[in-house]
Amino acid sequence: NDERVILLNKLDNKLKDDTEVNILSNKMNIALDKYNDMVKYFKEDSKEAKTAQKELHIAKLNLDENILVKEYLKAYQNVRLLYEHINEILFSMFKEHTCEIK
Image (tube, rainbow, N blue to C red; front, top):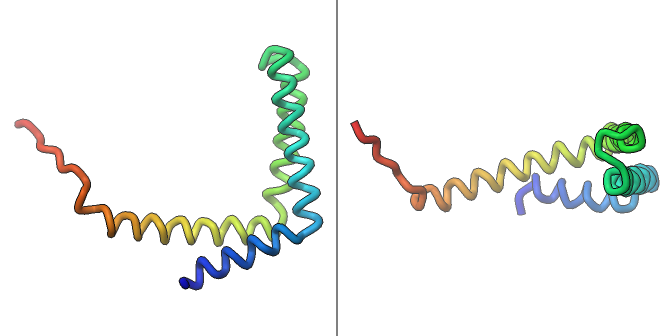
């Protein structure tokens, strides 16, 4: 296994076991549900929806600023780039070539 994938798996397990991350994640999910409800029952540009949107933004920002979440997202990005590179190698020969008409 690639060290980037191993690191991502370790960080994923840490995230699942981290109380602070779970609390922040739950707060964000609650804010998301509230926002969806406000948009469903009021207009998207209503005061209620705008307030809920701001609360959701703050909850998401708090989650994203957690050090463990930042580490995870960085590791995730590295693995995503690895898989993107592998995909490019494996399937580049199947990409269609377009001809330009001059």
